[in-house]
Length: 553
View (cartoon, helix red, strand yellow):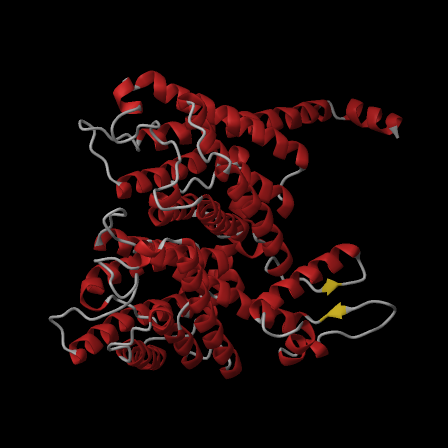
């Protein structure tokens, strides 16, 4: 074998160079990750400086952090993947994206990069910008807000990091392999959203080394363990769940130990959906008894039925994520300042996250009105539409319940939100019929966007769909949020209403969106939709092929 290798190297003088090139590539990945993390920490933390001379705001800081992520991924994504975060690296290893040796190297690079990046910040800024009245612990040091216990803090960090890692897993999903062009934008807006959502409560670190750099340079270690335990546990748990439950669509042969582990994960997740039933009753109710057939000591899972279960489960989790993150970003009281603009932009970015995470799994409708439109559009069967509806209602209920569990009571009820945070209600100057008209019209716009995305002529224009939907929701929320709350979603209004027992004008948030979905989808389907002609299909296929060849080149 060694003689063959020697002959091969003699016949091909470039073989040794390729071997050396491999090591050079690994070294480039290490230093790329190091520089990327240093650049991220330097830019992001500089954007958090706040003194009487340097004015700042929570919204500005959150947006800066997200855009710093965008810059780092754009610069070094093609070099090292630009993880920038041990939680992401841990998830990448468990997901199978990188090996354990590279994972350890990335941990070292990220820690060193964070220390260097923050050190450069300390060197170039005056001392008053690093420590002052507004940041006595040091600029960018992550601390818990008053009223937030350690348990609440670690749970918040865990949940928001779960969302971040879910976005990463969806990007690594083979079904999204060709949707990579806008990845830096999607990650940047995701991080901005999560910081706008939870930054006032825990600092929204989601990244142990991002917290390590400021802590070391400012010798500030209060509650520091939270910013390691929460994110790293979230990275491990989320990546394993996504890999077992949502990744890919291959048939699972349970004769192997690895497949058995995957099936255990599936059963655990199904149990979470119906905790009041035992496993046998749940499996019978969901048709799982017919999912298995015996033969040669091998259980074979039928893909179609498993896909249906996974799809409905993903829709439930996506809707829960929408309610938890979206409504957390609406908290406003004397301690946690907010504005209609920030809340609207945050809700839009949350929709972006949900579609990015679960769009390739279930379509991420998140909304009974959107599901009704897909049924009218002949994209989903009636039984599946009913299953989606139930999943959305259950998910919304769970998501808002989690919010009430992790936030202090003064964040849910305050002088600004006496009936409960995120509760949709009419402006006092509007009549119920005016409110109904507003909800109907803005939902018509939302459904028109959905129909445009589903149009066969847009079949190849899917890369930036999460961004487009997110910005559209932000726009509609900014437009009508102060009038009706801009619900456009019965499930989104139902959960706060049932948890807070507030039902004033609640019927508006069902009749308006559902009527809009029915009317708009029927009109678009019969008046505007057009199937591609054969020549157009061939041209689209050739264009896609040329794009793929260019990417491979």
